[in-house]
Image (cartoon, rainbow, N blue to C red; front, side, top):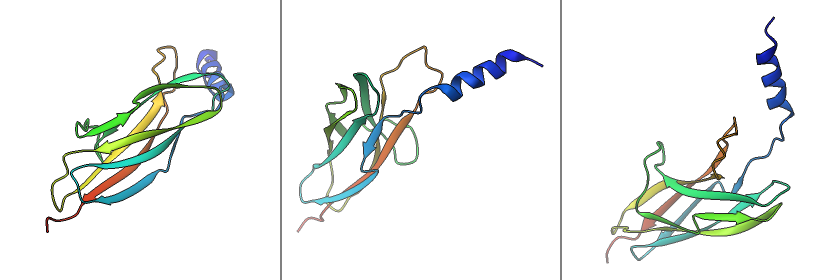
Amino acid sequence: MKRAPLLALAALASAPAFAVGLGPLAKSGVTDTDRKGFYLTLINPYPTATAFHAYAIGPEDETEQVRVRILPAATTLPARSNRRILVIATGLRPGETYAFRVCAERAQNPEELLHARVCSRLSARRLPAA
């Protein structure tokens, strides 16, 4: 019996089951301008200060969404704390509904085997022109 795979599995099982938090997981809104803003809460469940980054992708794929700004997109949160981030959908045309996801994850650490992220589904609808 090979011991290395069992030891690796045991190490993974004993690792803390922490993951970044982001909420709410779904949100929608209506605007009469070409921009719509949303506040999301980024949560650090780790016992130490941790760097995170947030980014926007398509509703069903990994396509980068250039019409979305996230402020701040990269931040370091103190241990077991949270922070609101501002997400702005831009370039909305009259009558358009624009759907996308905002994902957050811990800043990349090349030594980690598991890479967890959480995503929130957002949609912004602009009212039709009068």
